[in-house]
Image (cartoon, rainbow, N blue to C red; front, side, top):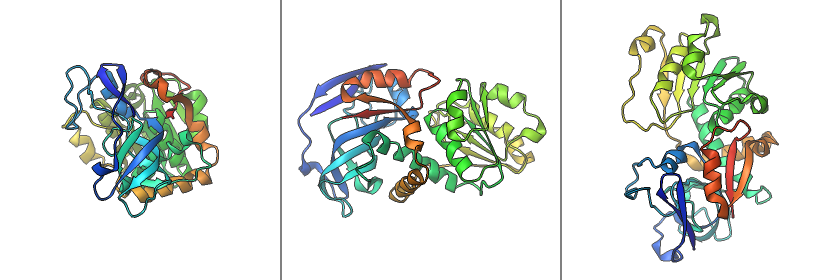
Length: 322
């Protein structure tokens, strides 16, 4: 079977491995044939050469883990040890070993759901990040009539903007140093701010401070404090961006004096929220087509990641298809 691995920063190598067989499956797992995958912002540190926390990330110059770092996966079930999946099912969800960049993938069945095969595989892949966004919004107060700001207007940040507007937010501000003005209007953004988050917050008037601030950048510590500083008194900050550091310094004085709530968390109840994402996408036709702006074949993985790593204004979501 074909498989990709990172052998150096910014460098994939395609290799052929023995086919994964059913005898490796544990109870609750399924064996998938790769159909499509989405490139997530959280995949990019590994692409750049940063050493992650997975037990198998032990390579000298790169992770060297087969299939790493893809986790947003679409596949066809070949063998199932999970009661809800059958051979021939087409499913979307999590490659639980972050090893989805290979022809055959073993994944936990609890993080997968079937989808309508009339949906193009590259669009089906977008249901996984949409599920993460919808689950995060469930942890927030009712957004109806509230002002929401999303720091970071990459593929996840734009989904947050769209979903927040769809859930009744009065005004959505998107903040990103990349010019997102053309795509922002497709994703419910009322005010697309082209600036770094520190510059944006330094110019906020008291009456402009949002009720809810979502940090959708991650991978460094600065933007969380900017989100805290930006929130209106009594407001809520949701930290969604993936942390590369164990500890983040935040202003507890600002948290206390402004009666703020800070929340975060990974996506739980995955099968349920994947179904919610499917329902949401059906209720908003055109969203997935607007979202997936670039599609690459499995022979173009290097190019897909190189594009994902560049700040390109019209690039939203990148999919890789078999």
